[in-house]
Every structure is written in C-alpha cells, then in structure tokens.
Image 1 (cartoon, rainbow, N blue to C red):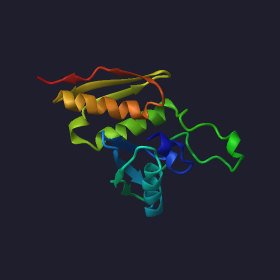
Image 2 (cartoon, rainbow, N blue to C red; image 1 turned 90 degrees about the horizontal axis):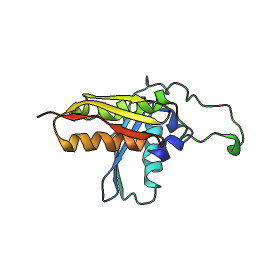
Image 3 (cartoon, rainbow, N blue to C red; image 1 turned 45 degrees about the vertical axis):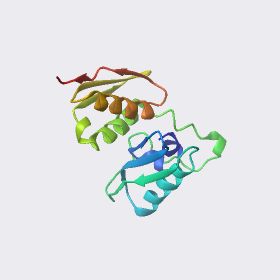
Image 4 (cartoon, one colour; image 1 turned 180 degrees about the vertical axis):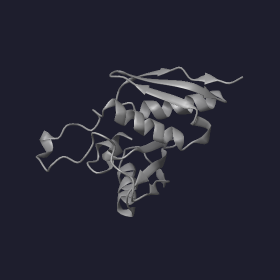
Length: 153
C-alpha cells in the first residue's frame, strides 16, 4: 500500500492492498482507466517480497482523487513531500474503501486522528477483527492502531 500511495498518480486514489504470508498481493479499489490499473499491478510487483498480484481494481471513469491529494504542479523530485504524510481524511477514506470491499467488515467504523487510527463496530469473528486491523495498519501512515472492534457472540 505504501508503494501505491507513494506513486505520484496512483497515490491520489482510494486503493487497498492486502498481502498473505506467501507474498501474494490483492489490489482493490477503483481507478479511472485501464492504464492506471495496469500501473498499480506493476507498482505492487516491484515491491520486495511480492510473489504474485491479483488485481481486483475496478475501472470507473467517474472516480475522483481523494481530497487534498490533487497532483501538484511539476517540480523537482526532491521538493515533493513524501506521500506517507497523508491527511487523516485520506487515510480514513483508504481504510473505509478497503473495508467496504469485504462484506464481513462493512460494520467496522474508522476514526483517524493525528497519531491514531481507531477502529470500532462489530464483526462476527476474531479473524474478521484481525483482518480489519491489518488493513487499517497497512494504510495508517505510521499512526498507532487502537482496535476497539467487538466480536459478536
């Protein structure tokens, strides 16, 4: 996810990436065209330890960049701020987008502060609770994770 966020074009969109222990990545979210979808897969494949990519990104010409991430005018590479300094609203949007792609996680709430991502709501299993936490941690931009998700009995 950090590689996607760091990309000057892809980092503007609410994408999600999950990876299993074998290094297999699943990409989700929406991009405006097929070229961007291919680029996302290429970016993921270049990450050390990635052994395969399933690209489930939808093509939606109406998708818009996240607030506060519009492409800046061309400037020297060293003057570009790191993409990992994403705003709380952007981090929240990325996490919510990734959670919405998984029906078992749609009841999870997300609040993002300066140094914390807080998860709430209810899920049906410990596995779903851990999965939501992993998604949030991957997109947190280095923020501390406060997982308050409850598992239904």
